[in-house]
Image 1 (cartoon, helix red, strand yellow):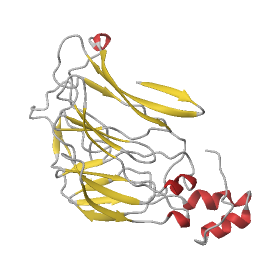
Image 2 (image 1 turned 45 degrees about the vertical axis):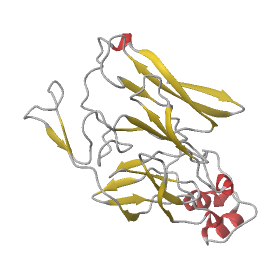
Image 3 (image 1 turned 120 degrees about the horizontal axis):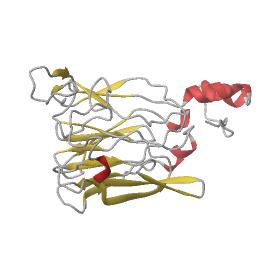
Image 4 (image 1 turned 90 degrees about the vertical axis):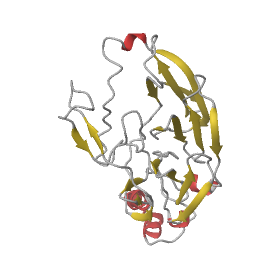
Length: 269
């Protein structure tokens, strides 16, 4: 994993590594994930979508086919990663065992991919059917990378019309926590409070849902959670404005009442 610093920002570089000997497609994947130090205030909204079937995970030392394997609800088959936390419990546990303490020293860089953006990158890349999906911070571009090709070329990219004014409403960098996949759809949130579903094969927009208003201080940075055919997302933004009231009480009070202000409160995270 590699990050480069420029003009006070952070440009993330996607790095794919492989072992000297072949362990199959995508022996290991890494992506820059830089924490901003703040947390979202999350509500919930839902949209209909197909859900991933439960998968089974083996305890340490056992194969995934073992009869002792335990259920990991919401997880895909081993080798795929369809949710930021891989399963509904956000365990981020993978049953793959090709990389070990003994052979990790043999890993080498296979290829790299730069988003070209100097902002915090906090989204977990998804891997589905030999394709890696990456969502960037604002303006929330989406990239599909072909893992079946050793050089990792792009299959498609999508650049949404995210409102530039949303950058001024984000409290702690213009990050995005990634996408979620189910039923052939890739779902992610734009910073300007729009949830988008793309065709995972082509990058074509299938539907959009506007769920908030940047004029009231709302933004969206969280990754969607897909459970049993529903997409759960939430807005953030108002809480930090209210918390800043001790420094700019008039502005904070107006923001918390839902009114647009010209001098928004500031906060260092």
